[in-house]
Length: 426
Image (tube, rainbow, N blue to C red):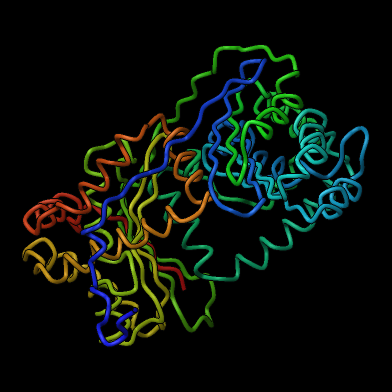
């Protein structure tokens, strides 16, 4: 009989073992790689097509986002309405997410509807025609959104900090301009689509309560397409990091708040310091219980929220602190951010604080391993970055074992305030 008077024993997340379920690999008849995972109990499936079609590859600003936005807006056989109705009829969802390096096309549906929906996705990925009227609507709506967003100090600050760190002509530092949107033509979109949405470069990921039958359906639709493997073109861009470290902009003379961005270039996830710095950054500003939040939100009351985030791209990365504060306390908030940097460099965190951060990170990781969609996303990140299970296991080991002395040493290396660029936009 269950003893309800004795509470269950509480365990820290750091005490658990973490295992990323293995992923199956399969090669379609034409050589396209398929990575699939059978997990979960509901008859639902996620299928992702990952193309090297991010901003890094565009020769003309705005093309990558435009192609992703218009991918399902018409083929030679179906209109945009017919394509959307095809997914809605089966209660499915299709999303296209462009990024810095990859564009991800994701289908969510009941497993039994895959034979009906895979041909529609295949048609989009091989026969999108980008009707001129759809391009005109996209350009009009995008310009309207941009003009509205440019009134917001936080939007402008996000543009400025990336441009300062990477350079305005670098793919990771470019930001949208009205004239670049106006200069988009159908020929630009068609050329980018033909080159970078080529099935010869795609990787397919699938997860859910699935098995051999679902892989067979994918092979029947996508494995029969003739593809020509061509050597990938190597693109390179020079960093043009601004020499001036501090820049302030007046975006709205009547603005009552200012957006603060303080950032630096940072190695991507391939660097051995990336995983331990995830712990350091979380302690500093990476979650609601961080030092930045405790000081600038809870103690000083300058902001509703302040965070520090690390971004990892294929060709680089960044570490950026971001917040919005009242106009009258901008200088004080910036001062306190640098003060917290100095504290972390000069004093080791106590074991209780470090344990809390470790449990937070590992607790989140437990959540990420709960469900097939979250697991396949972990594998997708590893595979697209050329990594394997040893990288995942190493990260877990780092999260569990990093010491207070190592935290301080990393802070001294990466939280030197003289290496940060500072943007303030009112």
